[in-house]
Length: 97
Image 1 (cartoon, rainbow, N blue to C red):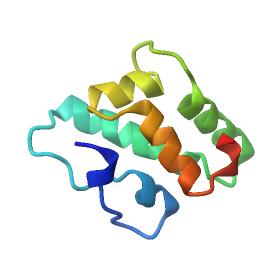
Image 2 (image 1 turned 90 degrees about the vertical axis):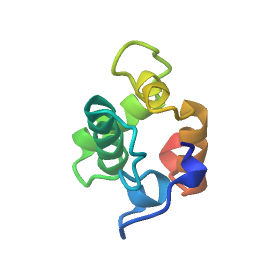
Image 3 (image 1 turned 120 degrees about the horizontal axis):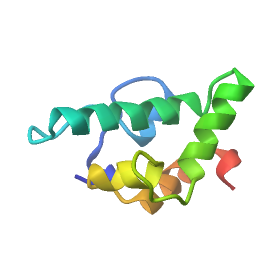
């Protein structure tokens, strides 16, 4: 699955970038949890609470490859972390520039 195959499923900006639906049928329960975590971070990055938004943005932009980092999570979901960041920039999320 690539981000290009993901279709928006809701009115929130996060759904335009990454959606928990449609999920491939072969996603394990752990992968579904990771997908929910990634989607939550994308949504939190635009939160009105500055601390929450800051933490989410820091996590999304991290170059760390450690377990449960954004890059590691993307790889576990067969997504390219750089593609995710590019898609976020395409949505005019100026905090990534």
